[in-house]
Image 1 (tube, one colour):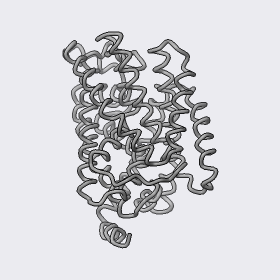
Image 2 (cartoon, one colour):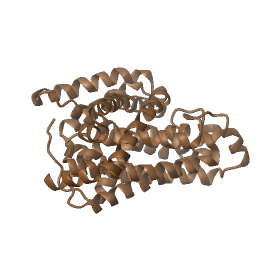
Image 3 (cartoon, helix red, strand yellow):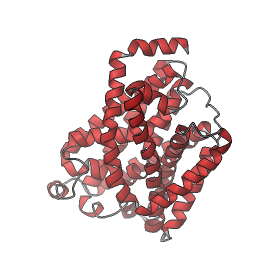
Length: 362
């Protein structure tokens, strides 16, 4: 893997990379929104607002701390925020989750090939593993460029499909009754929002931390985090409304948003399947890069072999299935991420001067 640093980043590129890191198979397919927000009916809107706020606040914190420490990998931010002992535990949780989420993205690619192209899931999983592998070999510059190019197309497609779903079937009282029976990933909307933001930030820290040092001003990081959070919040809200208005149909399918796209036309369905595949790719790339970059004890000349080995192992784990991984892996890691949140808040309140000192000496 070539550890070439990216050129100086602007707010839009930070926002696009932030969004692209998170909007993988679970987000763009509608599966995450269905499990974390739709099950609470209209209360899910409050959950989305809270999650958007958390994306901004903690995303900005990670960027700022990464900048102050001139971080090259997320472990530096985690250890600074949570100390050596607790930081090591959180580091382990994040590292394991990055691998698990990579497997989920590869599985998501397989689900797309089965449901949309009538092909074996092996074709999708193999293709995704290879695409992620070759992108990560190019280093952080290749990762950021690949992710930021995908995001505008992805958001436009998600908004278009969502608006169609809402217009086709406005939310009715019957939808609100039905939604109470689909189950949720958390006991209430507040915990669900915390959990959703937590596991997504666990993914994002791997890319956000090393982006911080590649900016000249803190305002760039502020606007990057804010625009990224607003983009994520808008996307989640649009998907939420479209799922809620078609809840009876989408609650029983693996990829809800593609089902809604199929109601427009077979061509739009096919196009959205391609867009969704690109969303899966963007998150798979960030997960693979984060996982491999963490293993700093590996000699540089063996990194390519580590990337290959990780891709193969994730491909094997992906055979468990996409929705199974989203249902059980994501919430579990989300709860673990609460400790990381607490550490970031502690640093922000009690180690602010240390952060400023680190930034001046770097």
